[in-house]
Amino acid sequence: MMGKKKQKPRRATGQFDTLISSRTTIEGDVHFSGGLHVDGKIRGRVIAEEGSDAVVRVSEVGEITGDVIAPHIIINGQVKGDVRSSAHLELAEKASITGNVYYKLVEMAMGASVNGNLVRETENSGLLTHDGAKAEADEGKSE
Image (tube, rainbow, N blue to C red; front, side, top):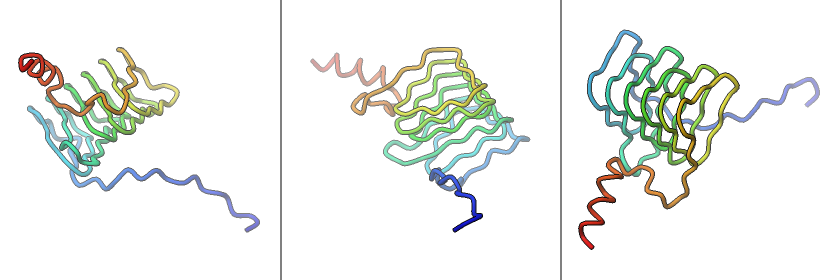
């Protein structure tokens, strides 16, 4: 195969079922499964269905003010809130996060910024528990 360039294998990121366009602003939480692509603005939490293999992608013009919780997260825009990824987190060169980042596996391009803590989670940390603090408090009450 002389003369052919080897192509980098593409990572499977799923199909994007839902698009929030650049002309759209959502006020309130967004619960989803499958793929969610954000070009617009969301003022509220973005939460993947528990147990799903969901993907959320925030483009360079996308903006989320609230927590983002999903197994697979790709950010190239702005997030003002905590980011929790139970599988793979990709921060592209224009990513800007103001909040803590909880991840299992992270990929960060030069130029991406995180103004908060980077916390590597282990498998059994209950990363996608949407009300993690509440669940821990409830466990403490039952003892």
